[in-house]
Image (cartoon, rainbow, N blue to C red):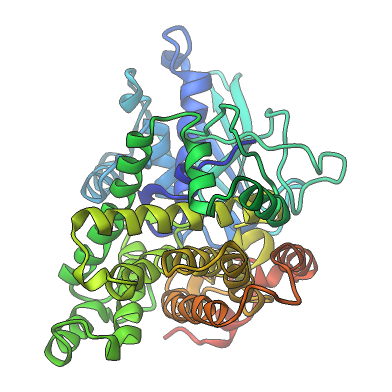
Amino acid sequence: MTISVFDLFSIGIGPSSSHTVGPLRAARRFVDEHLVRPDVLPRVAEIRVDLFGSLSATGAGHGTFGAVLLGLEGWAAETVRPDQVDERLAEMRADGLVQVGAQLGARHDIALREEDFVQRPLTMLERHSNAMQLTARDAGGAEIAVEIYYSVGGGFVVAEGDEVSDHVGVDEDAAGQEPEQDAGEATSEVPFPFRTAAELLEISRREQLPLSRIMLANECASRSESEVRSGLLEIWQVMEESKESARRRIGPLPGRLKVRRRTGDWHARLMERDPDRSHAYWQEWVNLVALAVNEENASGGRVVTAPTNGAAGIIPAVGFYATHYGPGATFADEADREDIVTTYLLTAGAIGVLYKEQASISGAEVGCQGEVGSASSMAAAGLCEVLGGTVEQVENAAEIAMEHNLGLTCDPVSGLVQVPCIERNAIAATKAVNAARMALMGDGEHRVSLDQVIDTMRETGKDMSHKYKETALGGLAVSVVEC
Ligand code: SF4
């Protein structure tokens, strides 16, 4: 499997990459691969959706049901706008009809009732705890198509029928095989394949290239360099728009918790105190960007998975630091700023590949260390390279950031991606800045390697009770009384 930076950073809707974007993609894939043929679609009278494990346990708070409905209509996570989501879901609520395949060039309306969604929170399928089965039947009850999908984190989707499986939590016989990936996987041979940090460092030393250039060369196996750069700048633009959109929103965040938004108020106060975004207030600005992007995500807005929606604020927040407080950044012209952004995202992407290849970026598989921890590590590495770090210092920065996120559990209150997720992004972003700065104070030599810490994260995730893996059955989720 060749993981692209565009797989790790993909545009989608909130609030969750594994529980919203993944199920949407799975349902879309089901319709696209099994139902849209002219001799099949008109026969479909009923679609049943079985949700297993974490997808069922926190699906309601994560918008899973609406995402499945949108996927059945063929909407794409990358292009659907939040206002289209709201509009279609309101229409479906009003008339009870799903326009199956409408966005895929064929349309067949069916009624989907509440009882067509079957929830099995305590049933964990063997390959992954985020599982769903889709079954289409005709009017006589005969099965037309059935498929099981796994949402393995970051919006990645694997079907039971795929020959491959993913890392942690998969059955042991299948471990070590390479998973296929939905949603635009780059499949070309790359010049510098790597799975581990040791391999990445070896390539870097041999070729005398920084990590961003290695990743760029690999990306150029399937796209031109200008396409890679413009794609990355588009990703950055969406990150910027997410925080701007958050500033315009008012009222509490969606859901029973009624969490107060902070972005608008904090932005106004910071602009009063520090209109020039001086270095004295860097931490407040970084905190604010992380909070803003995650509030947008919690609102079901448009964000970039980085590498997941729950952790979507960290890469933009540390990117803000890189573009505002990096070397010469204050005075950088647009071309320089674009260079900083592309270098930052490519290096962060190279580190993301290591987590996806060797461990997991799924909170339902390894807890929050896989989501927020991975994002913090990716951001630290990206910042360290932008700040002029050697490849050894960059690896050290990524290692420090993950080392101090090990064991982080996933226990979202009320199953919403709000508490502790939103603040946790701000904390992890400032941790990433600190990790980069610590690495830059050293010479790159250090005791614990990045590969060792990734292995530790994977093993810690395996040992973690399922209560702490996006089920809302433990930790803050049960300690905080909703009222
Ligand atoms: S606690 Fe972490 S892993 Fe869990 S939903 Fe929140 S951000 Fe994602």
